[in-house]
Amino acid sequence: MSRNLIKAGHDLVVYNRTRSLARKCGASDESRRYRSEAAAGVEVLITMLADDRAVQDVIFEPGAAIESLPEGAVHISMSTISVDLSRGLAKSHANKHQNYIAAPVFGRPDAAAAGKLFIVSADQVNQSRNAAACSPRWGKELS
Image 1 (cartoon, rainbow, N blue to C red):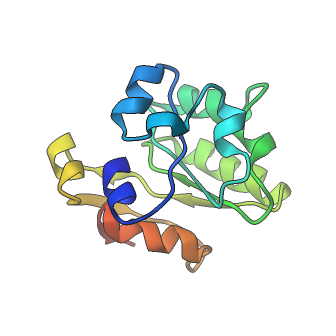
Image 2 (cartoon, rainbow, N blue to C red; image 1 turned 90 degrees about the vertical axis):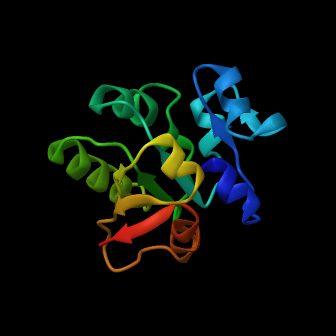
């Protein structure tokens, strides 16, 4: 997914707890050491994490992304998470004047590389043009 965004001309900042994995995403020197650095000054923050706990750690724990994400920015959560956490994310982002889109994906790594993932996007009437500009690069959107 990240390589497809880079090919489409998007600037990318990548955070991964394992820096070598961030480099594999095509980020080169743009990988960040801390979650807060990755969210600072961006228009769109995309997370794709293993489960509720991982999302909570990245977004809410001390030094987390929600504190650095600018007002008006959008967080696209592409993880498969619980409804309760998704609602909590929407509320927390709204309290910080940020936007939230739940957009879990379905597909294998080869589908991601080919831009053929299935994306189930649940937003409030296209909250962000920046987010909308990214989605065709990933796959087919199912709203």
